Length: 151
Image (cartoon, rainbow, N blue to C red; front, side):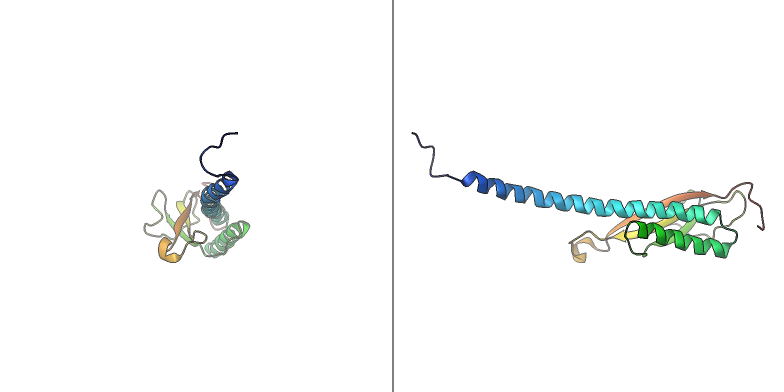
């Protein structure tokens, strides 16, 4: 019986466990962080879509605003998120950071709904992430051309 090297009986399992922890912990964290950002992106995208549809199918501007707020709240709640998103209306084709407009319910009107929410990465201090990752949902609204005016 020949002996290789020194006495290394049982050290392979220790090395495997050490390497598994070193590799798996960051990998699991990365998956959790990506899932958090993806969940927020899905929520704001759905919120913008629902808000745009709620606005375009409303009868009055006051009713439209209430329906937009409810649609955003429900879309965020569907993903288990608090209702802390900002909703803006901008001109069709404009960036969400551009000048906000007051959308109209006139036939053929077009505008963009932007729903923005900040995401904090799990277990990362604010000092490192700042205000977090900004997720934006965008939806282009086209009010029906054959909508009855004064409905």
